[in-house]
Each structure stands twice: as structure tokens, then as C-alpha cells.
Amino acid sequence: MTSTLTSQTSQQQALEDQFGLADRVVNPEVLRNSVERFRERGITLPAFEELSNPPKYIAKDKAGDADPQGPDPRNLWRVHWYNDKDGNQVDVPEHVVLTKEITGIDSPILVLFGNRFPMITAHKVLAAYACLAPRLVTGQFDPTTHRAIWPSTGNYARGGVAISRLMASRGVAILPQGMSQERFDWLDKWCENPAEDVIKTVGTESNVKEIYDECNRLAQDKGNFIFNQFAEFGNHITHYFVTGRAMAHVFENYKATSGNEGARLALMTSATGSAGTIASGEYLKDTYGTKVAAVEALECPTLLKNGYGEHNIQGIGDKHLPIIHNIKKHDVVCAISDVATDMLEVMFNEAAGIDFLRAKGVPEQILASLPDFGVSSICNVLAAISSAKVLGLGADDVIVTVATDGSQMYPSEIAKIKTRDFGGEFTPADAVEVWARHLANVPTDATLELTEFDKDRIFNLGYYTWVEQQGTPFELFEARRSQEFWTDLHKYLPIWDAMIRDFNAQVAAG
Image 1 (cartoon, rainbow, N blue to C red):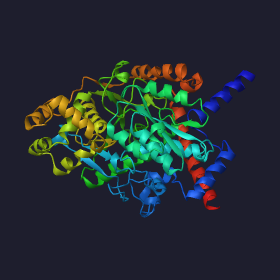
Image 2 (image 1 turned 180 degrees about the vertical axis):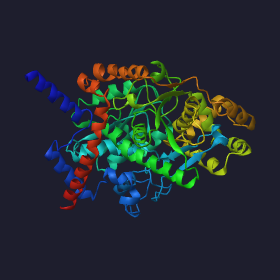
Image 3 (image 1 turned 90 degrees about the horizontal axis):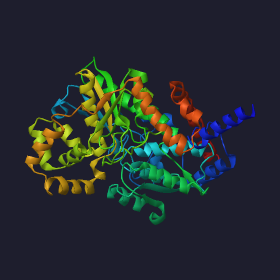
Image 4 (image 1 turned 90 degrees about the vertical axis):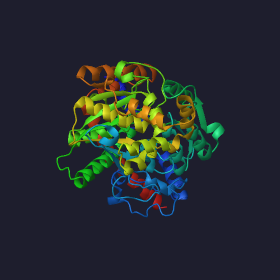
């Protein structure tokens, strides 16, 4: 009996401490510190329900005159998909419909723009809010004493630093030293003390374990609070509801305005990364029966082949399976080469490339949107094309995905790629070759429709990271094999929203 109680206590502690799944005030004193700090600074928090439907819940002038790219706490009310480039609230998430002229397939691809999010011009700021807000209102994170540690391969670390600063606390970014210079330039401006608060680990996109190792070192200091996006279930839950509903809204808008009344939402594609964004596909599956494709780099085919390697599709760290990744509910694994994403990133931002695409009949609306695609965004689109071919999708089968960030984060990378692959200048002849290699015939040989055997194989990969290396109780790890575990997670969002509303009331009562 004692052993059973000990095991239950260990599991409950892991749910709250490691996974961020508290449904109660864990430490009232810490909560009081947070309330007082927010009262002093005049900070209020949006509920997740509000972020999922701003036109219904958030006044368009809620952020006032706050600079969308500045460290103003009012920007918390812009951490959603309903912004334009100037930070104004819109009625439908901004997106582009990619058509056959550029994709080569009959299925339309709806792409939501992540660079409309405030401060970091990438949607990872939503993931950061999803991880910190529940920890704050449950009295686990103390902005007056804790340093918020944000491990990432790029945008999540920036999002964490931004959200930390808006929430009157100190944020620390951990990311590989090989990431784009623009990420580090941004961090230098936003961190309180960049020399101490920007920690560069060895390697590039695929070196996630080295990030974990640094987190474990920092966790020895109780003044550091680790927000591991790969294990914080707030990341999964928030994308399920907030991003999932935004995607559904874009699809319903397309169906209503395109004249295609027979359209069905057939597929959602997402690079896996921390496996937060891809949870939105599960919302679509529950709502429309949509299939979900998990995407990774061909140079590091962890899900596809239990493989390893190194690549430059920045933002999708791999060689492991995040514990918040519900692979059992996904349908396709697709691996895309960073050769394709690198070359297309250049083509989409060079006059010779745009001129070539225009001559191919690509509509001006699509051409104007191409700078809104970063390398992982291009990866998502290529995966959509490849998966559509494998699944035999047609004109009535709509695909949805996200452009995580835009080319604004990659000028230094574009310059490197131009020098390496094009001799420093992208010419019309290069445009012809890149089109032929990477758009005219998107390959399908690294796209796999998953059987249950495949899903179990991939699920089992997580054991080595989470049980053997990170100390997750085996019973909790194994519980994730059942969809009942994931469905039960949905209860947390209304609980957290109630706690956020109560927190705001306490702040206002002072």
C-alpha cells in the first residue's frame, strides 16, 4: 500500500513539476508575490479562450498604442493568430492560399502566417505564453525570484525572453551556437544581460540533448525555472485549442468564400519541433477527421528511419521524440531535405526567382507572400505537397499548415546559401534549376503513411530520452500510449482560464 501511494505521489509530482499540469495553487506565497508584482506593473493576462477567438473576446483597442515589436505588457493581448503586420486585430487570421501554379497539386494549401505575432514575428511566442502563464497562476513560478530558462533551437527561446520581460521577470535563452545570426541579434537587444542570459550550446538544429544537459545543470540552482517546451503540456494543450481553432476558422472562411462547397479539410502538416504546433492537427482531426502529417528533415530522419544527422531547417530540433508528441494520433511522417528549403528560401527572396514564378503564372497575391516564409515554413509546404501525392488528394481536399516565421529571420542564412550554392548571385538560370529540382517534382520516397506498427515504433523511441535520461516515471510515459491520456488533458484549459481570471481579479483588487 505504501509503495502504491509513493508511486502515485511521484506521478502527481511529475505531472506538476516536469509536465506543467497543475490544476491547483501549488504555493500560495509564490502566487501572492506574482499578484503584487503584476499589480505594481499594471499587467493583466489573457485567458486562453480569449486568445482562441479574439474577435469575440478581445477589444480591438485592448493593446492601446503599444508598439507590437516592443516590450510592452499590453502586447500579451496580441499573442494570437488574429494580427496584421502592424499589430492590428483582424477578423480572420491572415493567410495565403497556395494553388497549383506553385505547388503542382490540385489541393489548395492554406498557410497561416506566424510572423504576424508580436515582438518576435514568429508564433512560438504563443508557446512560451502557454508554458509560463499556467506556472504563474498556479503559484509555481515566482517572477520576483526565478530566472525563466527557455531551451530551444531558436524562436521559442526568443518568445520566452519576450514573454518573461512582459511578465516582469528575467528570461534566459538556451540555443545552439549555429543558429541564424538574426536570432542572436534579437536576443542581444531584449535580454537584461546578454552575456549571462544568452547561453550558446554546441552544434545546430539537431543538438537537442546538449540543450537538455545545460538545462539539467542550471536546474541545480533553485533560482532557475526550466520551461522545457518539449515536456510542458501547456504547449500541446494551447496549440490544440488556440491554433487548432484558428486553422478551423481559416478553413471555414475558405469554404465560404471560394465557392467550393464540397471542400473538406483533409490534411494538416507541421514540422515536429517541440510537437506543440502539430497538436492543432489533432483538434482538426477531432473536428473534421483531418489527417495529420509529422514533418522532419531528411538529413536527420528520426521518425522515418530512427535516424540521426544534422540539417539547417531551423526550428525543428530532432534526434528525439518530445514527450508531448502524440504520435499515435498522427497519420503520416514526411522527411524534407534542407537542400530544398535552403534553395527555395533564396529563390523566394530574389528578383530572378520572383520573375520566374510570375512567368509560370503564379498569382501576384502568392508572390507577395513569399517573403513570409522562413525555411521551416517552406518545409511545411513541401511536406503538404508530398503528402497530398501519397494520399491521393484532389481539388476538394484542402490542406492547412503554418509559416512559423518569415524570411526576416534569415538574411544571414540567405547570404550564406547564395555564396555556397549559387556563387554569390541568384540568376534566372538558377531559378529554372531550383524550380525543376524542388517544386516541379516534389519527391514522395521519404513520405510514409503510418501503420499502427509504425506508430508504436516511433512512440517507443521516446523511452530513451524521457525515462532513462530525464527521469520521467515509467507509468506516466506509458500512459501516453492511450488516447484517453491526451483527451484528459483538455480539462486543464478551462481550469487555467478560471485561475487566470481569478489572478487578474486579485491584481485589480489592490
